[in-house]
Image (tube, rainbow, N blue to C red):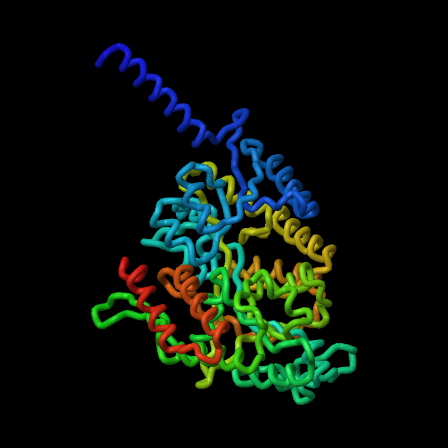
Length: 471
C-alpha cells in the first residue's frame, strides 16, 4: 500500500472511530446518560415540569446517571432510520404489535437479566409479558393496557329518549330501573339505536366507524371477531395464512355497508382516530375506542365528563364477544449498554411506571393524577400492567382518591375485560389494518354497490402474497 493510501486509510478509520464513538457515547462528565423517549412536548408545561421533578429526584438518588429528555413519538416510518443512525432513545414507547418486528431487525435489546435482577418478571401481567417474549427472552416492560369498548355520549342518547335519568341526579343513566343495560349490547341494537337517533335529530348520526391511518382495520378486526371470524389461521401444513375473507368477516363488513346505506354513519369516507374525540360531542352518539383514550373527549373535544359512558364491545349475531386488547410497552434501544438499561428501568420507577411501591413511585402516581385532575380529565380505573398484590392494593388506593366520574358508567367494561380480552393477530397486524382500511373506505364510498365478499377476497390475496408468504 502506498504512503498516500495508508494516510487516507488511517484518516478514514480515525473518522469512523470518532463517528462510532459519537453514536455510542453514553457518558457526560463521568455520568452515564440515559435518553428518555417519552419526554413531553414543550407546550405541555405541567407534564414537562412533572418530568423534570422526576429527573431531579432520580439524579439525586442515582448521581452516576444523567437524564436527557427526548420527544420521540414512535412510528413505523421513523423507527428504521433512527435505529440505523443509532439515534433511538435509550427507552421509548411503541405498540404491542411492534416488538416482533423490532426484535427481528435488531432494533431493541433483550432485558431479561435486568428484569430478573430487579425481581420484576414474576410481577408482570402474563398476557403482556407473552407479547414481549421472543425465544424465551423479554424485550420490554408494559406501560399499560387498553381494551376496545363502546364509547357513549349519554346526553345525545338521553335527549332522543334512549336513556333515562333513573336516579334523578340530573344525568342520563345507562341502566334501566331493574338494573339491566339500557345501552346497546349487540350490533343489531347499535343499528336500532342509530336509526332512532337519525330519526330524531337533524345532524347527529349513530356511530363513528374508522377507515384511515390503519385505525379502520384495527377496529374492524374486533368487529369481525365478534361476528365469528378468524382473520389469521394455520393451514393443514401448520403454516399461518391470512383469512380476511372469512364468511363471518364478510358479514361484519355487510353490517357496515348497511349502516352506511341507511345513512347512520358520518358522511366522510376517511375517518381516523384523531377525529373521534371531537365528533362524539355532537356529530355521533357512539364510537368504538380504546379505554386509554377516553379522556380525549374532554381534553380535545370539550365534552362534559358527566355525559360519558364506556361499555363492553357489543356481541355478534351468535353471541360472541371479544375486546381487542393491546397497550403500550417501553422498549430499549439495542445500542444501550446494560448499565443504561438498568438506569432506565430505575427511572421508570420514578415515573410511577414500575411494580415498585417505593416512595418515589407512589409519589409519581399521585402527581400524574394531580396533573390529570388539574386539566379536568375524567379519571377512571385503568388496566394494570403488573399483578403484584401489594402494587395493586397501593395503586388502587391512590386511584380511588382521584376517580371523578360516575363509576356505574364504566363498571361493566372493567368487570368483563379480563374474560373477553383478545390480543391482536400474531403476524403483520399493522399491514393487515392498512389493507382493511382500503376495504372499509370502498364500502363507505359506494354503499349501494360495494361487493363485500369480493373486496375481502382481493384484500386477503394481497395480504397473503405480500406479507404472510414471508413467514
